[in-house]
Length: 170
Image (tube, rainbow, N blue to C red):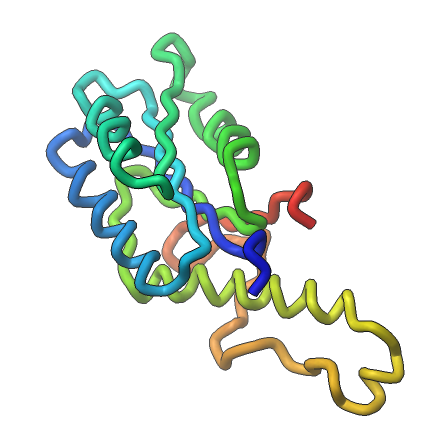
């Protein structure tokens, strides 16, 4: 798999200092078990506790983790817009998934996200097929990978993650 074909998981957090470290460590473990091509961008929504500081400490420990913080004066109604902007700007990989606030990612959900990455990689590979002759001879793939790769990138997962493609990675 092309190293640019990976996933950036964006996790907005707010006032969850007691839970942020286990949530992030679990998410790191789950994603690392599935793929080496991942990044987690934690966006603190102007927490009033030590959520952001704990996230920064973990970011020093894990290179796959980036910590960002929204300005405290930003109105709450603009949080989701800024999260989307930061997720696209900070993403290292082509597929991004914005999780619900303070979400603990399960292995099943991570596999669902990676199916979307596999589907995207398959589509990209097919678009770059060398010639029509290869397709005629059956050398190029004709079906998407995996029986569960039904979801399309650019939609929402069954459990609430918002999926998108970073245009500059195409």
